[in-house]
Image (cartoon, rainbow, N blue to C red; front, side):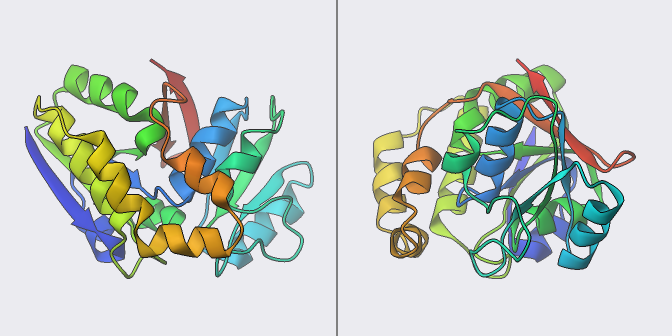
Length: 223
């Protein structure tokens, strides 16, 4: 198995094989939380215009996401996994757009399969990938606003790679590096310490969010 770590939007564009989009702060975890709380599916879109257009066509759908870390006007909630994890989303459909995570999903056009990953579903991801036995695995660490490497995403990609290779990475050291990172400081300044705590929990949702490009949605598969 050829395991590659790629970074930011260019890394997503270069992704091949089975690709895992990683945006620890916070898109991956918000998607995972929405699906874990019962949402039928999440529709990732790149632009605000597309998000508003889909909402106009589907008034019952929820709008979620961020620009510059804050929810845009008219959105039901922001890019916050801690908040999403408190909602009852059974039967709901969520339109989702962010500055990094959803950009990676819509730009990974050369990938055979696209999954959403973080620490929250790490073991489920690794088990699934081992079962699938793909020749190439790309771990796409999306970074800050998809154009600057982020410690949390790089460390998560490293963690997954180590697990896939049968190693036992030191999760405490990994978390220490993340807590001291620019991304963690940014979340604290935004008053989103709850999202930081959520993002660093291991295996809170043992599910596989898989993107279906033909349908344009991410659905949850339990493992």
